[in-house]
Length: 365
Ligand code: F6P
Image 1 (cartoon, protein in one colour):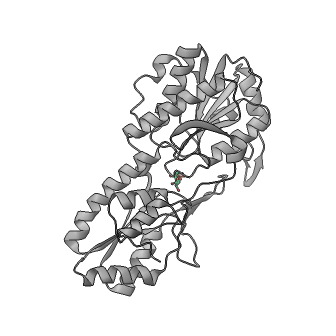
Image 2 (cartoon, protein in one colour; image 1 turned 60 degrees about the vertical axis):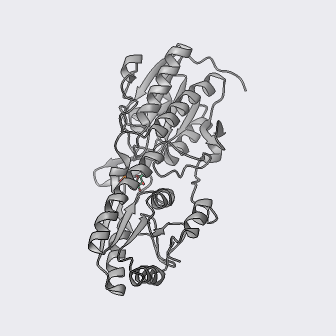
Image 3 (cartoon, helix red, strand yellow; image 1 turned 30 degrees about the vertical axis):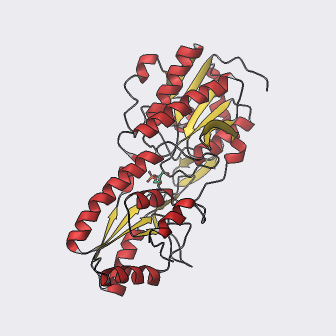
């Protein structure tokens, strides 16, 4: 691969935020400055800042003291896709390809390479920019852990920790009031958070998008527990869980977003249905965006630092159009074109599903 002489880079955070973004920005910026003497630009609000030419030079001190801070100092946007950008005039809305304008903006600042920190939407655009000749390296972010090509994304461990702590708290009140508590966690179309937080909290029943549930099986399970003297049950449901033959529950539709569906509300539906069928007292807890906030766990701080450092190392070795990944315990990379348009869901034969089943956990089937 021909090595490009890189003197200046830009870094951006796209899509929904998550804990660990600042840790990557710090690792990218400090490695680029101290090890390679590069100039670093920070683009504001993801691709939106690139489209609107909003960016500033990041100095070493600008990224000090941010390792432990949640969110992103650069800001983010999950509605700005440069290849399908919503342009609104009066009541009409059109999607336009503004990618050439982004390339001109990069050229205007003499930026040689772009570090895109984001999830599947951000990587799809990064892959398209790579095809147009932009030197890009992707860094995998998302609490959902659904990015194809990497075993884990940073942000996931923190979200699982937050969800587990919340479920632990719900456990005690469920027990006191002999209730069925249904906790809804995020994750979009993948059940990674529900599976991990559910197993970590010793929850009784886990509902994942990958395993459509049967309402009668869930009801039989909680009634059987009740009859055995276990007078409460904890059900953890992924926001994307659905009944066999049914549909996912949609909370919002965002017409101007390239990814317009926002899931949510399956726990509310289940509370009514399980109460009607069993007579048991049921309550829902929807954890929502709390899972995206707070300080990253030590695991995520380390992963984010490794990812950010590796992104710059790869770039300076002449690699481009790749996503940094952790595969079988090793840091490596994969072509962005292999990642674009795909997501990683929980395989039905995943070892953690087998372990959960072995300890008596129900999956509502
Ligand atoms: O992808 C991260 C995530 O938090 C999903 O788990 C969730 O479905 C979605 O983003 C929520 O998006 P928004 O922040 O637009 O409500």
